[in-house]
Length: 163
Image (cartoon, rainbow, N blue to C red):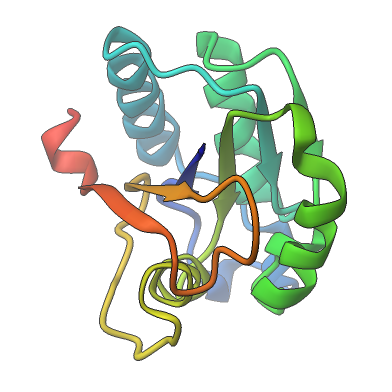
């Protein structure tokens, strides 16, 4: 089994402040709260073989904080995790690559993370699962075969429970 943690980026600057959405950084509050969440995850014993992040600034900054706290020594960017990303293209990549990974963090955006969780656990997205900023969802993926509709939701934590 593979433990997959879906982590939403922290609080980011308002859209109106930036001409490009991809350039919006975390606010100082977003950095502080994300660091507190990461420290709690570390205290709880979470460690990731890899952190895979959206290349958008706010997600990359969130992933950098997770790495700096010591949750993983490996971090990579993936366009699959952008707001336009598609779970099925990510799954194709994952099936070819995941052999040595037992614990993986995906740092991304809403509504993707909630919808991806619904697809993995229930086989379809209904838009009912929402991940708060700096929130974490844990899903166990089966080692063999498609994880769609066959995964187990084991953790759904808004950041307020980790602060």
